[in-house]
Image (cartoon, rainbow, N blue to C red; front, side, top):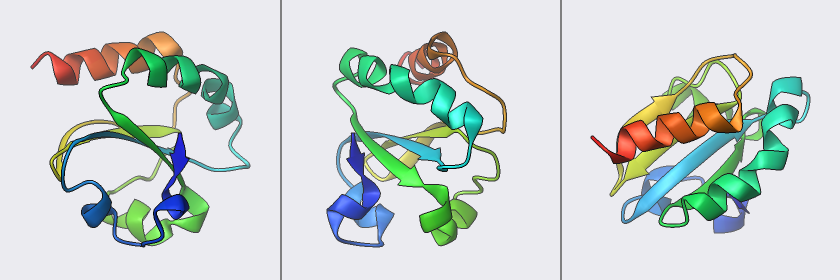
Length: 108
């Protein structure tokens, strides 16, 4: 999974304007983020038609505010620059919950 900073821009709109993306918001101090992180490579592999981008919320507060990401860990699905789904709250998330969320977005 690429870190948002790897793109060399602060414009997430530019990065996600074409294609399908899962944006993962987290923080280094967040125990619930650490809980899901070991499962992210499996999720990324299962949903390989998406580009996965990791956002450290503390390093990207302007983006988190713009997207109303108040709880972490959180996931946003973006297709061609438009948000098509969000799993945003402060609760711990299991791999199965993330799969159910992505499937619900993809199968609309």
